[in-house]
Image (cartoon, rainbow, N blue to C red):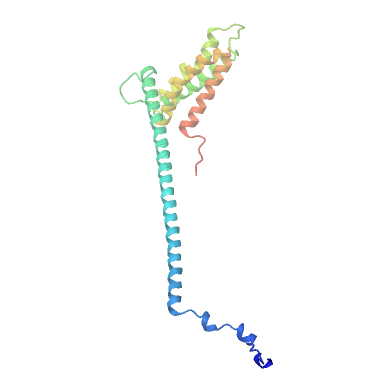
Length: 223
């Protein structure tokens, strides 16, 4: 009976059991080729996706820049148009109502002449005299009178017409045209709030020099 039992049991070596054949992990050329093709397709897909995203971004930036440029150009073009129309209205009004030369010939009051100097001195002297009258320094009175009223309007009645009578530059003529319309507006509006001859004359003087600074570029930096 003992003879029926196997006398020995075959035991496979553990080293052979856990041994992995390196050739089994070695990829065949065909499999390696497929793996390379798949990897290449993945890179191509990624590159295509990045390129498409870049194109869409550039297109969106291009549209945005175009719209921004269109808006900025429209706003820039509208501003000179308004200023040009306002300049035409002011020039036409001043040419209609402001004093003009009595002769049709060329203005003899050119820079350097005696007549030019006379008009200039007359303009600023009337401004100073009007200030003294409006501040009640000359012919003082406790009541509003004609002298203080003339002092309040002296810049509009004497200073601006005297300066316009000269042969001045284009920018100075524009400043005087604006002042010819602005000063009466100030003289009529301010008394509704504060009844003061001196305040009206002071506002006219500030407007005068501010307009000259704007039109003649006194505040602009020069190299």
